[in-house]
Length: 299
Image 1 (tube, rainbow, N blue to C red):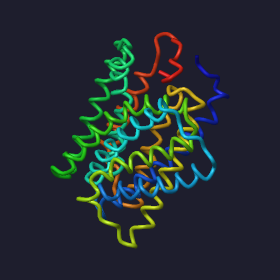
Image 2 (cartoon, one colour):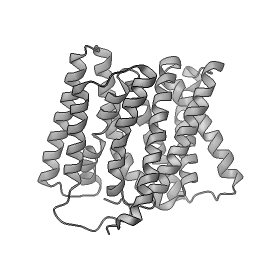
Image 3 (cartoon, rainbow, N blue to C red):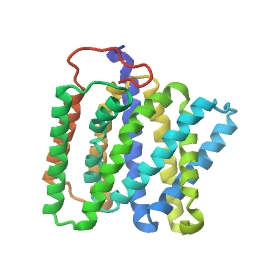
């Protein structure tokens, strides 16, 4: 069922803070990726997050999750590892604001995943929204070509779009996970499972970061952990349809951090393409009727 505005005001504020912290983490991770490579940046960030989360989780006497809940943690953690590899590999090759703008197609992809997974019927409005969102992606890529960022930037953009596909499923999993697990549990298991995924390749790829990079590793881990807790708290208290628009505040933070940290200008075509994608997502979110939301997904 729909929720009154007073009931979602605090979850929206908390989710907005979570997105701000996550955007700050993106900026720190871009710096680390450029310095030590995407694999080592993710390995050591998630490992640090697992240590921080484990100390808090076990220190507070939390109960080990059931098999069904643990399975959900494993699915989302594994998916997030792939999603993060694709996103940060791409982000090292494109401006921060452009990368975040491309990732905004995730809610549109989620519409088709909902049809595939939840057997929902795709409405004509959603199809039109998808076409508008696709046009927005083309506009951003045209801006990339106009700026002559080179073939590496194009490959980075494709990787980010692939990551957005993973995030579309992640949106559904996030809501399901928040219904059955506390924020601290979600944050710890996400970090631990992602770290476990990256450790598989450690014998061949892992290099311990130099001392100058350690504060960035710990800082990124702390930002990611705090963001996960805030978002999990918010998604446990409000339906996804109310919180999804909060994702778009990430573009403002990405533009700000990109300019201040990496001296990246926000190009007009990036702004135009981002506006088209956001408009498409709002168009897709509008309902012809007012159906009852699925209690597990909020969709």
